[in-house]
Image (cartoon, rainbow, N blue to C red; front, side, top):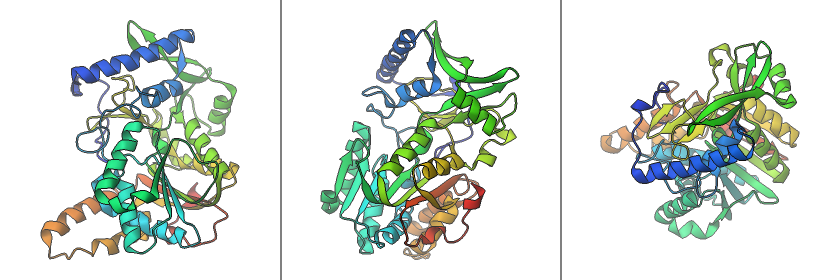
Length: 394
């Protein structure tokens, strides 16, 4: 679920908006790419590979092509676009880490650049600007958009910003990621009376469909470790875990903070989620059909934060804090930031209050979204996690 998503729509495509002829033609090119790879591999590909192609294939995938993705005119809106208070609050956590002797921030997947702009604005205000603000962004379209956002909001700070297309060989400082892990490809598995099956994709009469095969040993072992019952379908975030391990390999010293929607394992694999958490986003509508207009919609799955913590430990990092987004932002000083606008200035104060309410309300983003801090050789404070820490639930 992205910040503006409603409940998932039924799988019927009749309720989803029709794309423009140009957009449909682009989706046809993505579909042709997918069909070609399916044919080249004997008529089947794993769902994780399908998700990778649909989202990240150079020049074609959802995040690699030019369609507008974020904001009112896109498919979903994330917290930094809702209000600059989100980034301003996170800046206070950043200032604390920078104050412990670091001078660099690495943001993973900066999207529109709204978070980077808000963080830099607030760090300048409190006198804690880093020497370097690095942005790891695979999409050329989003690199351009984030550059435009920063040029408009903090033009005098652009010389501190650099864009990367891969993790640096080593890094010391603060890593930030907002709604990054949820968009990394996942394996989909289901448990049957006869064993564990792995979801794949096949093509028939021009349409993509689910195709199931016996799961490889590592996915069978994962299902057994989680004690998943027969009839259960779920996702395994193999790429997200690999990314966390890769990050741990390059992080020499410092902290990584990720904000995303998800649960610890015991909640993620709850009986009420027996059909998994896979969700798609198209024109501010959430639905469950990943084969609808490939290349034109986002495909996501909730984050298993227990698995993230385990991957971090495998890479030599430790969990420094884990809590709800609401508790994290309040710990970062969100309430104090709101008081900068006098309550009697209703024209400015009321919209700000409504936006902040979306961030912290348990009925909206406050509880479903979580924040996790991972660290290596970090001895400084993390005030944002000092109250309401839930690390013991991982």
